[in-house]
Length: 148
Picture: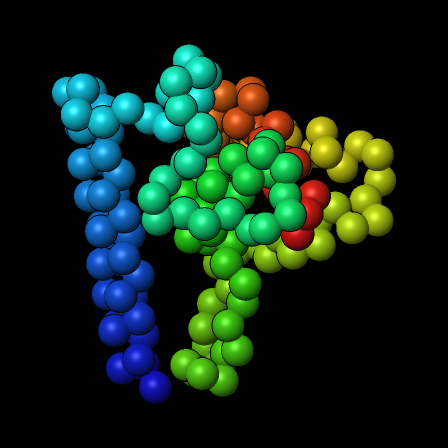
């Protein structure tokens, strides 16, 4: 059974490296002027919002929720994907994330501030994102989490 852990670990590592490579390539295109971030073009009023040519937002969400979904898929989904059935692999699969499904369903009024603080400050098991996300992006992310 332990023989399954290594291929899964390698697969996760390869996917992470490919994602990082794609992100660095896109960033270098923006820095060299070969590409312009869609959000910057949107703010300048020169184009319609399109996020990414490979990103298809969930239908029926507001523009803010779609931006939050994009951020969630880029920064959060690697750890917070829905849980797979453990029987697919083996029973010793560690749980390394907190499932965010229904996080705001019936939540108390202070829950949004709690989540905002968790995103900004992190915890022992989660990195802080205060330097990665702008305040508006955190608002977008929370707006998306309210839809889940």
